[in-house]
Image (cartoon, rainbow, N blue to C red; front, top):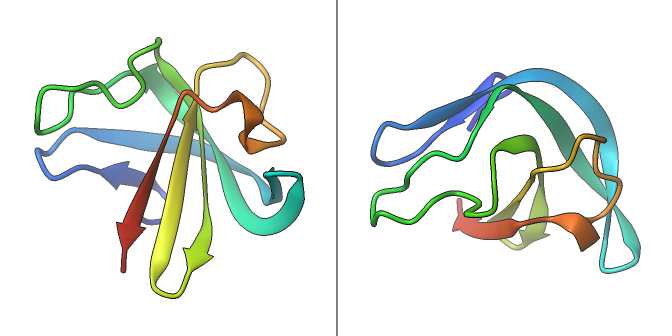
Length: 96
């Protein structure tokens, strides 16, 4: 993942259209985060055959630090930019 998009282990990717914010509410707490709109919304298939969201095309993505060496990525399907983790369709935790 970089400032332009995210590429998964199987080569599928999502390109970001714009950075929409630098803060986000997670479990009621405001955190430093990046919130992106997706250039061409889709629900890419991941390496194990599951879909990234499974509930429709991903329109927004947010990421934030989840603790020492961890990054959290949350995906959303709504029409409006998300303001909190409440409406995410899925989240993933990656170790840096």
